[in-house]
Amino acid sequence: MNILAPSMLSIDFGNIERDLNEVYNAGANTIHVDIMDGAFVPNISFGPPVLKYVRKILPDAFLDVHMMVQEPSRYFKHMAEAGADNITFHYEATTDVDRDISLIREMGLRVGMSIKPATPVSVLAPYIDKLDQILIMSVEPGFGGQSFMPEAFDRLREARRMAEPYGVDVEVDGGIYLDNVRDILDAGANMIVTGSAVFKGNITDNVKSFLSILNEKM
Ligand code: DX5
Ligand code: ZN
Image 1 (cartoon, rainbow, N blue to C red):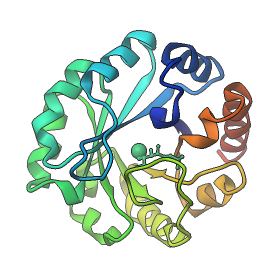
Image 2 (image 1 turned 90 degrees about the vertical axis):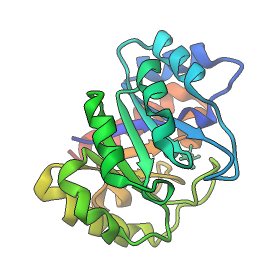
Image 3 (image 1 turned 135 degrees about the vertical axis):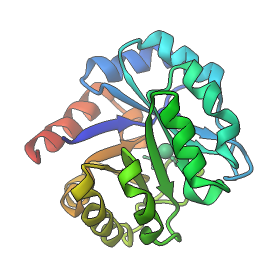
């Protein structure tokens, strides 16, 4: 199934409640929540209190938490308590992948692992049967509004080949717009994260346009 996951990094923070409701009511049931610590990435976003607020606004949404945090296991419990449905951590940020997968699993959440653009896709292989989703970054993590890196197409094809036998979702994040999303789906992604292309301009129109492309490709 193809899933649209709008990233609230690009939301109008003066109108979180209004804009989250608009995204949800337009048909996007998954919200991608970017947690940045200013150490793993050069930017700081927000933490569990904001996640908790999102959960309060959208009790039934699927909250897809993308942790761009050094040694992320320090915060897994906080994310779970704040309402995460999925926790994706970075391969490059942890000292113990197996431990982190188990910790998230034991809390009853879905587990994702992500790689930055310079990390070989093959590092995911030893863990693929223990994951629910893998997240291929198509920009350097840290900021919204960057351009999609074309190398990501081959990386998505490789990720799809690896994930397919295990029914693992292939998520992609960064620089995705209406004019490149078809090619990105064709390369093998089925979870599309998009910040600027949803939250800038007319949110309802943006979500509906993305969903019509995602649904035609199913
Ligand atoms: C970047 C974040 C993304 C970001 C995507 O580090 O992980 O989720 O919000 O933003 P756009 O879609 O604007 O590239
Ligand atoms: Zn993200």
